[in-house]
Length: 126
Image (tube, rainbow, N blue to C red; front, side, top):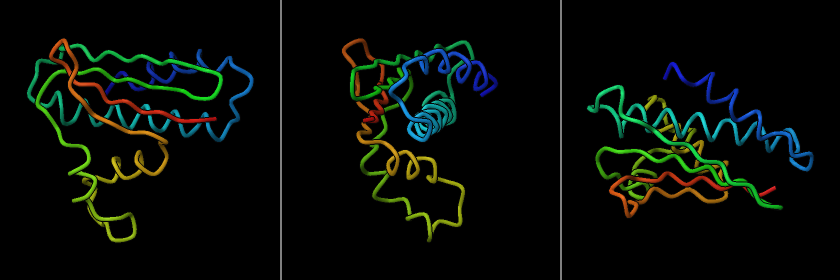
């Protein structure tokens, strides 16, 4: 989690694209950090600290795709989102980040890749 400021600094370089408004940009920053935090806390929980987490950002004329590639155990994102209480009813800290990501992102998936990793894909249209 110590890398969060470095990740945001790196991500800020992407913001050189003039047609992304500030509110969408802040939402993308939130999505990136929430996604990264979930991967560190859950997917990489029992892995050595040196285990890499790869982050990719792909831009098109109308959307930003953030891919966070990780190792670790499988995770059923849809099932977890269904089991976590809504914001108003969630007085626990568990699962709130997933609900925030689900509410902000236009697309949110977590799937295995051909190279035995997992990809958290977060898409935001602008």
